[in-house]
Length: 303
Length: 255
Image 1 (cartoon, chains in turn purple, yellow):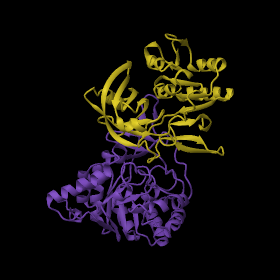
Image 2 (tube, one colour):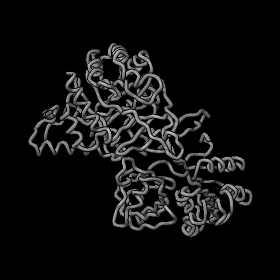
Image 3 (cartoon, helix red, strand yellow):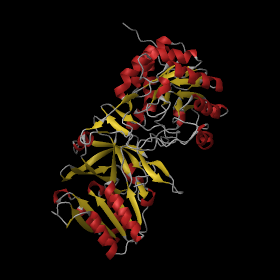
Image 4 (cartoon, chains in turn red, purple):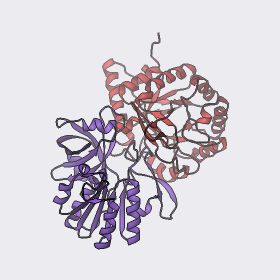
């Protein structure tokens, strides 16, 4: 068996597979299938300082090889996470990543301060949600605004800080470099790609929010490209996500430069996907005679 | 909740675009309850399709699903034959809070909303009355099934080609006036459910409604299938059809 453990910003994950934020709640939903200890880590549902109701339905639309969502960061607020879910989560023997969001730099800072003294292992800063009116993606598409938010949060926490990037930008490397310069310990990408579907009978967008975020296998090649670009632009670790649904996808994403991967929408098709990906990657490494999964990171040989 | 490959033991077309499946699904049948649903893989499509469970036989290890072809995904499922299996996740959600079998139940179905009521009707047997609305006689489904349960069955059709010419809610009103009713279980289009809930409220009869909404995970992880609900204090919030429902007390639903 090869070594599957990876280290992101000083935090050891027993394997490189993390379930992606927004796809696994606060960790209890998939327990009938496997314990959280099977995962390298879990990125918890995007959490804000105060509870958020999210967007009106419909929030889900299908796409070829994927789906759109416009949940709009529905969450019970950080205090519920800390008081109700975290005491249980910390017993689950997996790395806990709080995905934090806000609508102003001050709110980002406040929610960060709220988790600072907690058992959360890492913070993933969500400056890339496409489904909220204020903040979210607005911070993630502008280098100056992103820099300002990251600075606020960096000053408020000593926990390892991952900045989650949106693909809805012209140059992913520019924003990745800003994150690095402002003290992020890692970047994760990609969040969803802004998208739209229309019901041709009603001429209404299927999503009540009109637009939503595309995820699933449809976005995987875009994610591989952007992870490759970002990994070549910054020295901090890149966590790759976007449409990963098989172990082959996981290997490919790591070859593009990801030191760890996140699995999101694939959970909805196949709840076992994260575990199957860990097993499949392990078997492949053994077959290849590779003793350490870290040895495949960034090993793509570009033409 | 488990994932199970359910062999198709029987498949029959009930009406144009509506198919009834008898499935070998012992794991899900063992714990499933009336009003719960399963998530079914549609070959070639990313998202599973939520399909309500029509009948459950834990001894035989079988489920009956009745599915209407609504789009390309359900058409792909309908294209599967008796040599195939359905990839299911279930049982999912909260079903009907069944009253004592001896109490008098009225099951109100609108079109493809009828199948999930069958297991509840079976629970009440001869104490269940089932009323269902359809577009026309050709769309009427499950009449034999319901009558075999010992329940009475009355239909309404939009065009008058079978049963009452008019809305199923006309039958509900009549039934509530003429019969003792302890509980109403309803599933169908929102306008129908809203009207049934109003009639139930007027008569002071408990009413449980099964909702539907576009879903991704089906198990409360993605928060996609939002529905507006009142909480205990009467304040509005978004719950989720898959986990909080699909069956809700009618008074909790923001109509």
